[in-house]
Every structure is written in C-alpha cells, then in structure tokens.
Length: 131
Image (tube, rainbow, N blue to C red; front, side, top):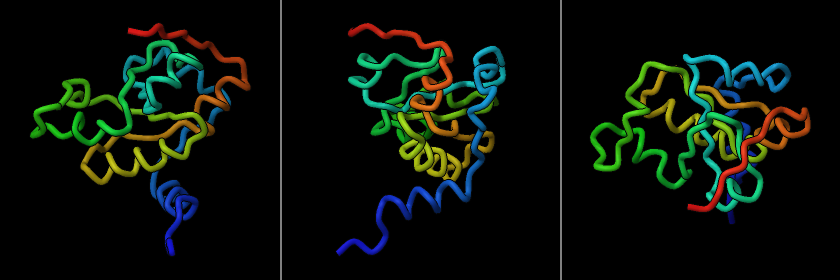
C-alpha cells in the first residue's frame, strides 16, 4: 500500500517552492533573465505545442542535465538565470522544481497551472515539429 501518494508529494513540493501566478505570466517570455523550461514528454510537445522560447528538458533527464558532474550536463543550467518549470498542469513541474532546488539551483520556480492554464488564457503557443 502506498502511504505517500502523488497528491501528497505534489502538495509538499508546492509548499516548498515558488509558484509564478499564471495571470500576467506571458511577460516572462520577454524577460532575458528567465528561462522557461518545458518538462513534458516530447509527444506532448508535438501534440500541444509549447510556450515560445522555452527550452525542452525531458523530465527523465532533468537531474542529469542539471548536474555539472554528469556526462549529460547542459550548459543552460550553468547560467545564473531564473528557471521557471512547467508541464501540462503543474504536477510534474512542482516535483521537478523541488528536485532541482534540492540539487542546489537557487533561482527556480514553477508556472501556476502549467501549459493548460497558459492556453486557457490564450497566451501564445509555438508548434514544435517532429525531429
């Protein structure tokens, strides 16, 4: 029997991280000090599009791309910018944000409501083609 389910994990993570309100969040795209990080699966990206200018990081690779000691490290995470993570509905992004915060990234947050909330407000979406 599971004693600490996903809802509890997300609630705990959310209480320990910063969440950027979705209202007015479209201005984040224009801020050069912010990197929007889409952690959804590539199939979601192709099907639903993404926030223009965002960086795609598959959730399963996040820790490996963040860790400078990892052979998979990505330089984007060595910058001193603020990373704002998002997924479809802010569950995976809550866990991802908490994880990278625990790894030592200081300037991190998640986007309230994820891409679903973004789309409801009719903010811009960029289609991504299959590679």
